[in-house]
Amino acid sequence: MNKPRVYIDGQEGTTGLRIRELLAARNDLDVMLIPVEHRKDDEVRRQYLNDADLAILCLPDEAAAAAIGMVTPSAGTRIIDTSTVRRVSEDWVYGVPELSAQQRQAIRVADRVANCGCYPVGFLLAVRPLIEAGLLADDVALTINAVSGYSGGGRRMIEDYQSLPPGTEGDGARPLCLYGLDGAHKHMAEMCAFSGTSTPPLFVPSVDHTFCGMLTSTPIPATLWKGNVDADAIWDVLRDRYTEEPFVRVVAPGDNAEHLRDGRYLDLSECNFTNRLDLFVFGDPQVGFVLVGRQDNLGKGASGNAVQCLNLMIGAEETTGLTDGLDG
Image 1 (cartoon, rainbow, N blue to C red):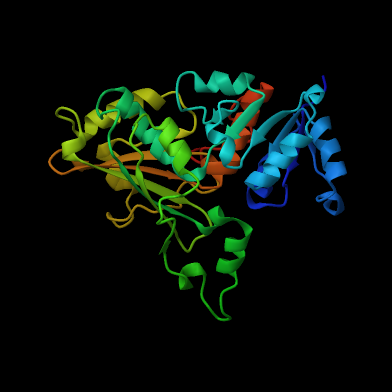
Image 2: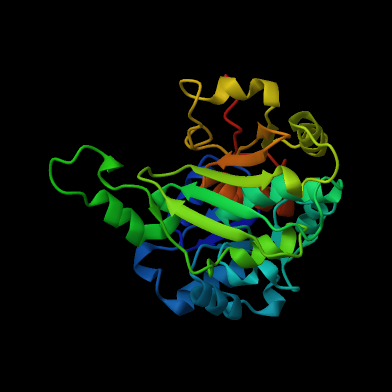
């Protein structure tokens, strides 16, 4: 039986490099790597795109659109696009298997899958089940505070953070910075489309002085919850929703302290180099609760999730080549 041929267009970018690493040890795939000297040769790229059974596009929006245009319908090439604009397109399936009971099967049979953005994952998977369960209204107005490692900003940001003055000790020379304060962040569209609330959230992203890792926190005041809701009730909904999911760990409120450094600090790096998402519930019924998602922004938020979708699309075991980081 022939192995599925997989071509990574944009194999030298941050997302593409991590995908290459995740696929490197696979013997069930034929990974097609274009020679470096032909990476910008459109005719050679066109051939690779049309020869592949599945192409993963790790390109900016316009370049991804151009690559899609190179694929002839007769080639039958299926596509996972990691860029932004097609995530809310009716012609593409949104690539988060855990989003709903139907999403995994939709990805399996799709010819066009739009891989998720990094920030939305921890927000969507925390909030959507609570709206569907009736704990929150379907027009609830939410705020998202999030911090990512600098690898989420791509090659230019990585080079900026890593070109520190001589003698500087580590990346800590650059402080945490807020950005996207005009409300026009590229991930807003998918947050609005798939969260379950009709009210656009207020989103405040930031970049930290570490290579990868992510925390996405959604504080929800007591006045926004429907009925008498406590932390265990929230946990019950999330636990029941994700109990069979291989890459989502819902931490019981009583176990929160075990995950806090010095009893106070929730570090963003504990899921690094895994495809795991941790979900936490902090707070109390009098003031409100903070829902927190923790992941690797290049793992469940990008490259790892793309490989998870790839596995579904080619009929492989969904977890192949991926880790939740909890074994051993």
